Every structure is written in C-alpha cells, then in structure tokens.
Image 1: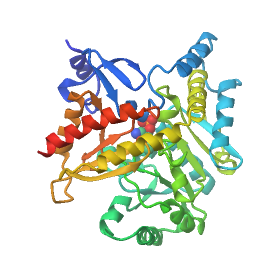
Image 2 (image 1 turned 90 degrees about the vertical axis):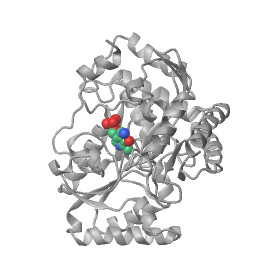
Image 3 (image 1 turned 60 degrees about the vertical axis):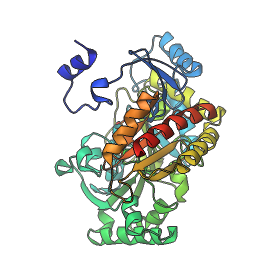
Image 4 (image 1 turned 90 degrees about the horizontal axis):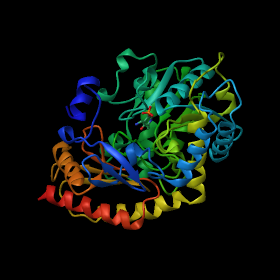
Length: 426
Ligand code: PMP
C-alpha cells in the first residue's frame, strides 16, 4: 500500500494534502530546496506553509537545537526556569515595538490567537469581538469563530459574539478606482456602522491580520489599522494584530505588518516562521492586558526548551543577516517580474516583500478562476517549483519562500511561474 493510501486510510478525510493522487512525501531539505521520495528536487516558494522562514538544514538553527537536545532537557515550558525561553522573550519584547511588553509562549498560531482573545476578553470583561471577513486565525473554537470564511470556520458554534467588518478586497472592489484616502474613509464608515449595532463599550477587541494570509495575501491601504484604532480607542476596544504570517521582516519594508498601518497594537500574535519548523507561537503585548487573566494561563509545551532554542537561533539569524532587507530586495524582483507579465488570466499581483499573491480571473472579468489557478499550481510543480494556494475562492497562488531566498533562486522560480502562467493563459 502506498503512503498516500495509508494516509487516506488512517487520517480524517478533511486533512488537506496538495497534489491529490500525486502527493509529495518530502524526505530531505537543504537551503530553499526539498527532495521528495520520488527523487525529484523542488525549489520551495511556500517554505512549508511560511514556516521554514530561514531555510532547510540551516547550520545555526540545527546546531542550536542539537545543543539543547544534547543537554537531555526537553521537558516542559513551565514550573522551572528555562534560560532559552527567558532569552527569547526578552528579544521578542525588545523587537515588538510595545513598551513594557510581556510574552506568553504557545505551540501554534491558533493557541496564540486563542490566548490573545482570552486576555482581551478578560481585561474588557466581554466576549464580543470584531473580526474581518476573509480572515484566518486558526482552528480552535474561539479562533474559528473569528475566521471569516465558511469553509475555514464554524462560527455557529462560537463561544464569542463576533461582529464582522468588510475585508479590504471587498472595500477595494466596492470603491474601485478610488484612492487610499477614500478607502480609509470607507473602512472607518464600515466600522462605525458595525459599532452602531452593538454597545461599543462592550466590545473587547478587534483581531486583524495586517495582510490576510490564507485569504489570499489581501491587504487594504496603508494606515487601515491605524484608522480603525482611532475609532476603537474612543471606546477602549483593544487591537490584536495577528502577525502569524506577516511578522519577522517577511513584508520587507517593515519588521511587523502592523508598522505599515501607523499603529501599535495592544497584542501581537506570532507563530509559523519563528520556529523555522519547530512548534513555537505566542503573544506579546502590553503588560496590563497580558496580566489580566484572573487564573493561571498554562501551556505544558509552549516555549519548551527545544522550540525556544530554535526560536532564539531563528530570530538572531533574521537580525544578523538582515533578512528583512533581503525580503524587500528579492521580493521586488519577484513582484516586478510578475507584474510585467501580460496574461489575461492574471487579475492582480499583490503583496509585500516575500509575501506575494497572484489572483486568477476569467479573462476580461473579475470573476475568480479556481480551475486556472489549479492548472498553474500543478504546472509549477511539474517545473520543479512548490507554491501555495489560497483565497476566498481558491483562486490565488501564494508565494512565501524562506527569507534567505537568493536573487538567482528568485529568477529561477519566476521563470517557472512565468511558463506555468503563460501555458495556462494560452
Ligand atoms: N493566524 C494566521 C494568520 C494563520 O495564517 C494561521 C495558520 N495558517 C494561524 C493563525 C493558525 O496557526 P496554526 O496553524 O499554527 O495554529
């Protein structure tokens, strides 16, 4: 029986696996490349799921993890003092941009957002949350409730009362042709309209991705979260920035996605890239909010010695090698190349740094074309390039490679993408 058949026989039917009957078992990796059990080597433009932020088998990270494992101590994240964890928390607090910040570690992005929602609900004594349509915040009960797409969420079972704001792309569609200022005005009107239907003072927080990730790398105008926060502050509503995809310099111009918005969030959540594949997430936020939970909040493994060792090595690597600068430089080669393509099926190329989305439409319309997207996706794989998919209608190719991507690798990937898009457009 093949591994795929065994997988299908034992895993739940909804487990997502790319490439259907041609699913890949990745057996090794080096730099920005992975090798499958089929013997083929692929350039990875999705970095796992934006998880392999530095690359595969990077000596500084593998060595740091091996050193920690070599101590024999891989136990828990709590009850004892853990040097790796404290050091990582100090670094994250320092780069967070939040004065007097506190850090709570988790194992995943879902747990990070679950915790942030819990902290906000406690400090505000309310379970009312504002969220944005087309968002993705995780797979736990509360995070699904603030996830704004039916196939990713089950908010009818929500422990929260959620009020929805229009997503940036809806606003953009509605306001087509209007400038950033008009979009910001429209977004603020939308927020005020939603707040008019609730008692604003009773709302705990707005949770928002500075650039929507799973939703297809959608972003509104710069300053959007800042414009929201001015209104939120009138009622003491907190702002949670979900930086699970946008953090650590990925967007090039800024270290955090929120910095494009002229705002400092009350809470920032992180995960994915900071572990470079090891399970690590968390919340960094204002002490007053982070300390608000009346009982102990507890994670047996969040920030455990091995994950924290990986996190320290990753963050040092990002800062020492100016990966934010690299994301900006190499990302602009990709963005420039993709934007210069003349293909009727490409509706939009958008993104920042090494977080780039290509939206596919039926030629001459804004109608999503998931079938064309799938063809491009499969053709990329045939050409030796792994990319991601996403978007509300499954019509966005997502590019989120390791931040160490070289110019040469960017050009190689760009050429595969160009061929795949051109062949599909024909
Ligand atoms: N927030 C965002 C923005 C995400 O993209 C994801 C994962 N795709 C999550 C939260 C949930 O993270 P995890 O899968 O690690 O629980």
